[in-house]
Length: 163
Image (cartoon, rainbow, N blue to C red; front, side, top):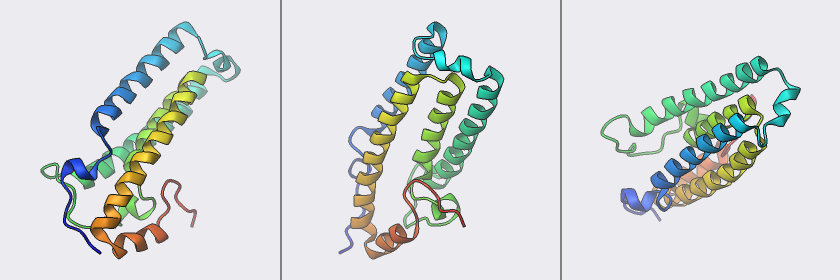
């Protein structure tokens, strides 16, 4: 059964915007302090700093590209989500490209710093993002019904299929 359009509060994970802001500040603060004082970045001595910066920068840039492309699709005009299912572009390759892009940015920073604490935060954040994505998928199933269920069967949640 297809339901009416949920309000902004009903379609997002509880306090999602605030939680994402706290997560970003926490990640940046911890990795910065960790990099300055080398609490858990000792593994960085095993890999050349320029290589870590190059690879991590590419990973983070790819994540930034994904965030920019999908944010424009989702919130480009008037900060209102699209009225129907978006299944083209990055959304045709994975169901949560915006969240995957954010996680790639975090992963890029982890590669740049080789911080074990940053890696631990990345794992925790990936779990939180997965819970938020699952919540939003339930809303989309209620609102879009079989159309979204068919999309779920065709498009992977996090990792695009190689063609």
